[in-house]
Length: 521
Image 1 (cartoon, rainbow, N blue to C red):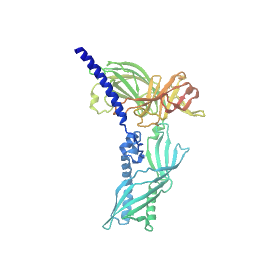
Image 2 (cartoon, one colour):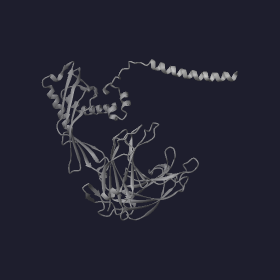
Image 3 (cartoon, rainbow, N blue to C red):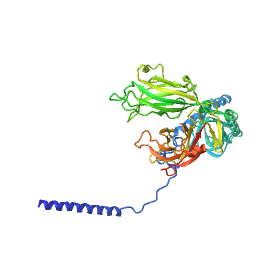
Image 4 (cartoon, rainbow, N blue to C red):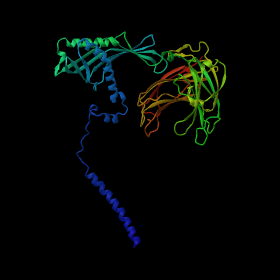
């Protein structure tokens, strides 16, 4: 009886569950509302900040962050202070202060732009700007013991600035400074309300205020007066390669123990100072305090009088930041051209001679270095064909060799699944170079140049260039591949230069613009 009771109970349970699911499904369908309305579509201007950020995560900070609005308003107040002070004393006014000053929600518009270049290595832009804004500006005026509050209304600004990028240089961002001026006096049209009345209707007041504004602004930046914003040192930006530094990382001895079990996994990073190119690296020697590398590297030198070779030894870690063991530098001006030199360097924590931490012994690094300057005429510009000018490469490399130059200009329509913080990774003959990463941008522009010294023309080689999205510092997602392209270098060697846009493989619409040059002596 117990057996039959168990079997019947099992079948009863199964039938009951099945019937319950069927009945529940039909009840769900039956009681579904039939009067479903169309969704309410609201314009973006009616949405609050949080809703916009969730819908449009890629919108830049200057659009959605009020801090930039506040910074501009603060600058406007600072500019207005001396102008107000000059006129309050002249007309016996006690004070003029801003009670409120916000720029509103309407951006300026560009009605047109002239762009042209000159023989002076500069790019000139003359945009026509109009701003019909809705700012909230109230001014408190105190005079003769009385206080009055005036509100600015119907503000319109018309301006014709000249923006000059100069000098144009081969290094990113391709210009050394920004020069801004006004081609003519700006036209500012607005009203002033006081106690509900329009003050600008007072005869003569409107013209008087207009002339004060135009004169004061014109005194600051009307051509030929200019506002200069330095971006980089033009002298350093204009420098071209003058030689090659050959480096052989030989060995290290008695390195400091960094691992928990009393070992280290050392490798060496080397780079030239005053260069923004990524550091070169040796291989990692596992569990070794006296590693032997005997690995060769070549670095392009632009200023042997000021540059130095920076060598840093790290302990490789599988998880987390790699520990720094020690470092040292070799000033290039101490090297005799074309003369090989073997150096054994003590490793220091920093290059500060007064740092007491440098008294601790951290090991020694042995390197062989040779600086080979280019022969006279090697860096002259050679017009190869109608595609552009190609600089000559050094004869310092073995005969038949040259310099392979890769310029990463920009990419378009790249998009990651979880994030879009793109950078470019270049892989050539085992060497890896990377551009900087740009946050939240589907159309990034890098304008970065990379150079590879080749002992012979890489006519049978290929170069792989990948666009990768770097994940945010806080988050669960890993890096994403946004597309790649593989370039056969035979075309570059034969044509000396190519500058093309490539469709990225494994990308829906992504493209990347690359320029490759083959410079020979």
